[in-house]
Structure formats: structure tokens, C-alpha cells
Image 1 (tube, rainbow, N blue to C red):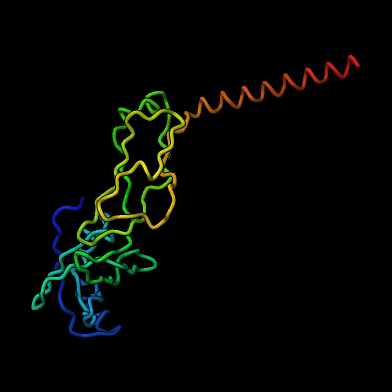
Image 2: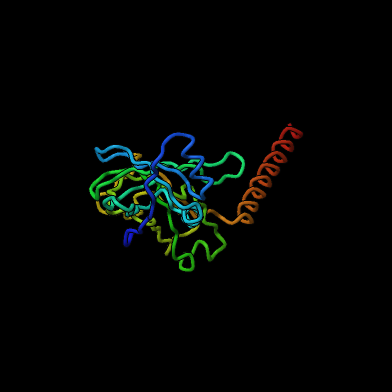
Length: 217
């Protein structure tokens, strides 16, 4: 489960509109907005370098932050959108939503596969095929998991891993109401090739027998 909520420091932006946003970028800031929570939206600026570092660290949109703004009470927020430069792919604007710990939100949570060394199927040359690297869940803002864990111990070639094999955090549920496939242990390519060769051989043999029978008639 997610540990301590990280702080995210921001500055209140005095101006609004495109002109103020452009000035913020010239000052090394990324303009943004904090909305929701039955209060007025709050324009903010976040230091560009700090935001870029957090984005590169990953899971930015699935992390609950404690936003600290001078002169304002701390508030828990989650990122809802990051706008980027169409060419440079650098952040140009960021949107945050205020949350309570009990707020329910939809998030994509990464799937982590563990114990490959204890998977007989992989030891025999099988390959882990990941169908869903992340799963969308409805979670409580105060209990956002870092990952969903799939234990590969004991799985054989041909075994399928469904959603029901994953222990979801308390209060969380998937947005899709069915037991979909998350991954499987696929047969090694050499074995699949051998199977295809055998099938081809059986077809050739069958054709030969049929041709012989027609000749005798």
C-alpha cells in the first residue's frame, strides 16, 4: 500500500490568463490549477525542474500529494492532467483536484509480477506474457496502492493469470465487472514451432495416404 503522503510545494499565482501563464514559464515555473472541494479554483505555479523530476520518477498521476502553498492550508491533491509541449514534450500546464481521504477515484494501478525464479513454467523455457501491465481500479484517496502484485510461484506453461488471482486492497474494486486475463505463461517459441512442424507433418502424411487410396481405386 502507499506509504507516507509526499509533499508537493507550489506558489499561488497572482495573475490569470495566457499572459500570466507565459510569464510563469519564463520564470522557470509551470502554471497550474487546483480545483474541486467545493471551493474556488486556485491558480498555482510549480518549479519546472521539481515537476519534471517527479514526472520522470513515474506514477505521478496515481500519487496522492500533500500540497503546501504559503498562506494556504495544506490540501491533499491528485493530478488529473499534464499538458505538454507538442514538440518538446515538456510540461506546460498541470491540473490538480482536491481530495478528502475518503474520496473515491478511478486510477490505473501498475501490475508487478514476482517470484519468476519460483515459476516452473518459466524454468522450462516458458515466457511471461503480460496482457494488462496496469489495471483501472476505483480506490479510496487515502489508500492508493503503489502496485498490484501477481505471484508467479508454481505456475506452469499454459497457465493463465486472471484478475481473481490478485488480492485487491480493502475498499478497491475494478472498473470492469468481469474476471479478465492479466497475463499468462506462454510456451517457448521453439516448442510452438515444433508443434506447428508436427501438424504440418500430419497433414502431409494424411495427404499421401489419400493420394495412394485414389491411385489404387
